Image (cartoon, rainbow, N blue to C red):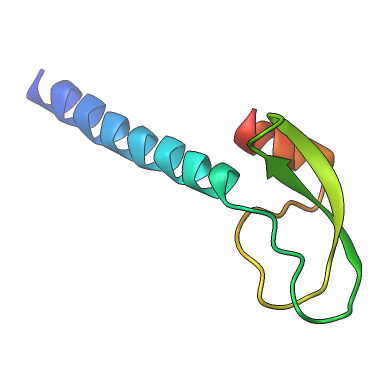
Length: 77
């Protein structure tokens, strides 16, 4: 019984960290970057609550960038 309660507690803590991290990532602003690589990626626009395509410069970005539309939706919607 104690093991089950301990496991559930650890699981809840882990999930709360994962959910909080995704919310933080999804609320970050779009940063195109200062380089000129023009890498096609997706970001979550928190104002429209949607994933949008953009061209990433390749440097000086943040974590709000996803390789596919599906990855963006899974993380932020």
